[in-house]
Image (cartoon, rainbow, N blue to C red):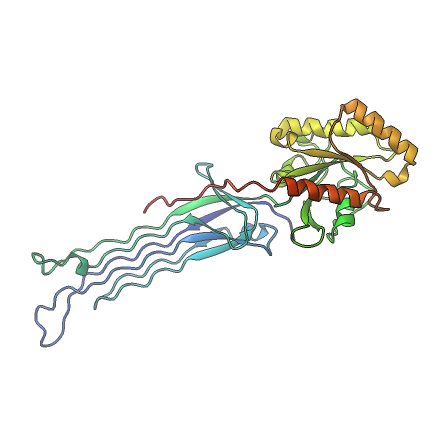
Length: 350
């Protein structure tokens, strides 16, 4: 299935049904009085989190979504049927914006979480509501109000605990394959990862975390080089970043230059990510001798003046993976996810 993380849709809530003007007409019952019923409320439009979806591709084919309108009131005090709500399934992690104002309406962060995006119209009142001691034959009713119509921009941000950064071919996909059951494409040429991949690492609900692999960045990505920075948003919700550094001796950039290149792109376009906790992970250590790895690590830390955690791993031989996973689990346990600050949506009319 094609990975699509942005879509524009139109949603229309149902109109409220009109109230009815009617009078009781039965044999042998003179002056029966009013009996016009109320209309039904219009259906509202909700976006509902669905854990089985991981792309917005369906919204590229169906852009118009309309809830059912309420039925008009009828005689004999019969109220019109309310319109059915429209519940649209979206992937967990979807962020919803109003296209006209650009405001954030809300976010879907949990399965089955419902977000109101268009409120249904209110019902009209039938003439029986206007009966009084001085108005025995009311001939007035009210009209149902129209439902809201909105143009929405949907943006999918994957929900992950740990994000992977690095140049193309730094070993990010290999690390995901080694630590989880996810199977992203791995090959000996750049940009084998064309869209983000998620992998669940660990065993048990309390000892697992989600790892996000995004396409590699290259110098100039902020200006559109390579695949650009489009997919960086998928690590925006992560609590920890792993910066993979390729230790292959034939790499065109020295290890310190690899780190500096990514740091420059983060600072240029995502200042928040540049301040996120970040660990260095020296990958492909199995193709170097232990002495060479120790020398490269020492030179790297000196050049960067790095004081944070550093791990030396090999996805092929699984060297250092257990220590890395244990350290990540301990870090995430000490820093649980912050409570969601997503906005609640209030209808434009009561």
